[in-house]
Length: 427
Image (cartoon, rainbow, N blue to C red; front, side, top):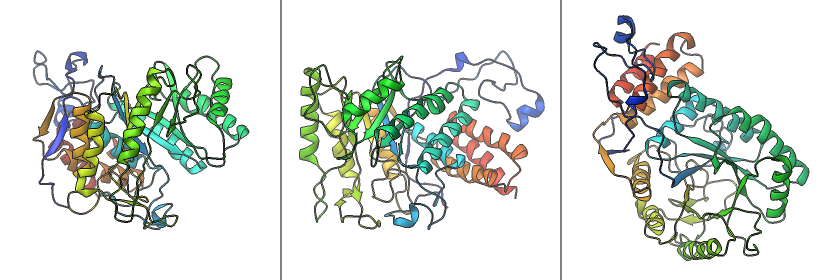
């Protein structure tokens, strides 16, 4: 694979070297770059090193989260991959339960300014993948404890009953939220997304159940699409978010009329106390014509122009949009993925995402001169997969992988690339 020749982008990262403890390393450690992020290797202890970190904590209140599908199992015929896809991931057909996959996705999304993953859960497989994702996030925390990244859950309520929902919320409270410091909260309230289907539980059903389970702090509930029956000061849902709309035979209808209506109505809802905050969404396109459950629905991506148009609806809107949901990070089945793909312009939507998030958060974005930064992540994934699959000794090579991740977090792409490549070459 050739090194990407196009420009790469990075967000402005906070300088936090002042929070690091300066500890001299042994000569062996210094030469082998074995230090973790809380140890700065220096030849002269009187000299400090200023390091910028990806995922550094920020006071910016506007947030961007990616809708994430955890339903894949490895190989082209694996779970969901075998149902048909529009494109192929740059890293190949991956396993949604693998920590190598999670590290790649977390680091890449954090690099371009995404604040966390909202993970879709419907089946036991999805739940297991969600819990594995939370454990993988801890691996990055071991390297950089301040790593600022959240995970939330989006429950698909297809087939949901009150008893199932109650058991689900109990498990979320006791076995998920209690096991991680990274679960998504808003104003100290745990956040739960509901992907609603007609004919199953109502918004009020969910509110009653979560209030029963979460007795101390009632969760913040978000639901796809608007419920026009909500009552001022008495809504079960705290915020609604738009979901992919449009579709036409020529792919030209991307839901513009719907999205304009959604933001105007959401603004009215906020003013009349029917919701607590406004959530927006963007999608790059849609295409379910290849998938087994498809309905021949298609939204033309227009080579990135559609995605920018959707962001413009947010960045040029007078409405104060608190959160933006990316729909989606990796739904390769229905062709709405932003994740890098095989072929030309692999990182097109990653770069567009970085640009638009910077505009949304009113940050200054720098064109990244570090040509290795994205490519290093592919090598990190390959090295991690070799370790996870047992093809590299864990005790020997995992510490080296941590160093590669450390260098990536410091935005030292070439060093990160070389460290990961050493693991790959030591076969």
